[in-house]
Length: 502
Image 1 (cartoon, rainbow, N blue to C red):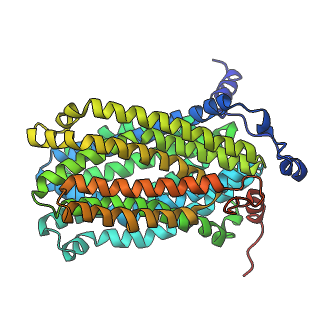
Image 2: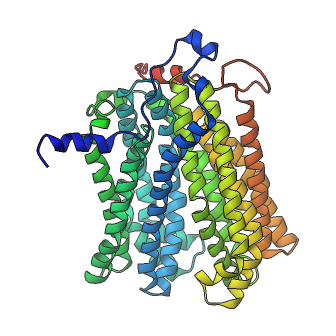
Image 3: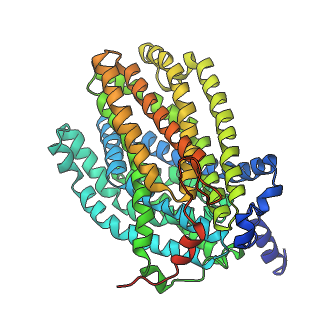
């Protein structure tokens, strides 16, 4: 390959999957509905969303593979180590990872709408601002993690398990400060529809993770501390590859122009989206952790916790496709609203609902048909396998509603309505879901089945409320229905360039 051919090949490989939207139409054409989506067919929108969602789903699965490999290495170190790392992972998720990852999703709106509006330079500014704010917030999180063992022991956790969890969490702190900029880079590239590089970087990190775990945990004899450091190595490798791509790729030439002092301005505007985004994610994330705690209070807690763990892992993998579709529609909606194309945004929301419904029904049917086999994939215990089989029909229905709410949440993020989404998740899970789970499990004595009935209630309420909001959104900026209006995307894009008064 000649030196002239190499840049051309690199550029052809790095082009976005979808061509950037043309510059925004005039206000008059938008008001008349004369945007570029008028001639767009539903089938064309399906292809666009699948092109975006495919690599995103693969990326999500690869991230889960990294966590699975970590658990596998720890499981061979001993029961105490496995219990400690399981508790530590839950502690780290609740106290830090869920909050910071949730705040990073605010970039879905900011970067997506800026890209759609043709204000490409602002994407780099938004990314820098997010990295600055989230890194600063990571400092108090690190302080909490450094004292995780004492906190868990104070909460009544077994002393040995608390000590093991504390050791693992302390050595996980370096991973925290690689995790934050990694999330910002993922959102930065995703908003430009550059999802293949995200997938490839995640794949490289997943391939390197077993070697890192073996070297640090086994070869150097660091045990669980080595597994924690291996997570930091994998995150750092993933981040380095993405940063290198952003720096060298022609596709990011306009969106990354170097570090800018503008990142220090507009922080309150970022927080207005980031805080509700974090609340929206955490309300849902924490509710699943509460289910695990409730399972431990049931009769025969070992059986209940084991079966709940199997079902949660199954649900996690099944929902990867709807999560990818949710990320794709968030990008599509934010891009089209930023470009002033409300009809295209509305079409994207309608199409993703049909796709998610088809996927989730297929997954649910497959799960019901394979219910007598799934339990044995996780455990050789016949009691565990049979109990898992009884729960599978309920889990299949949960997957349907969880998948639908995942894509509707993506629509909400694309519109910039995270505050409303946070309120909906609070009501769905903590007014309906968790109380219902407690009632069915402990009052009606349905045990683990009751926990899933309660979660199903929460998912149904969440999906219906999000659907109501999506149906009543005034895509064209006129008041009708319940009067909900899409935030003016262009106002948000251009107001972010103004200095903040001090």
